[in-house]
Image 1 (cartoon, rainbow, N blue to C red):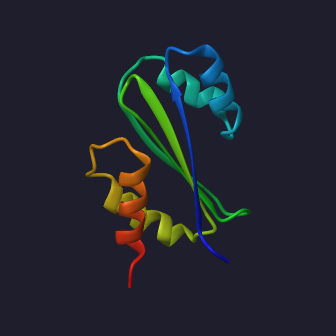
Image 2 (image 1 turned 30 degrees about the vertical axis):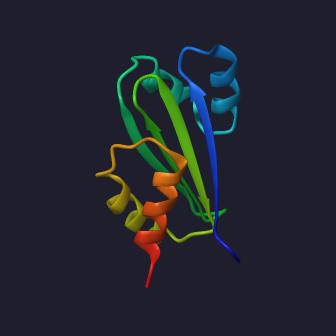
Length: 104
């Protein structure tokens, strides 16, 4: 199976975008509480059943969720280690870090 990355983005000050964004995330109501403060956020979750990792990043104005599947939990951890030092909040930057984390 080929790995796929699905990216969703929302502006924190746009209620419609945020409602749609949070609806696609398990326990989105808990994430909403964290994002309310408007502080930068970086979090990850892994679902064993679907072999899916979600990486949520926010700079306090925009929030992005990078959904990567199918991957193992070990691969998700390798991506997290590679991604955690990146300050650029972009789909292209995330995809590059995933490629670097999983190469070889």
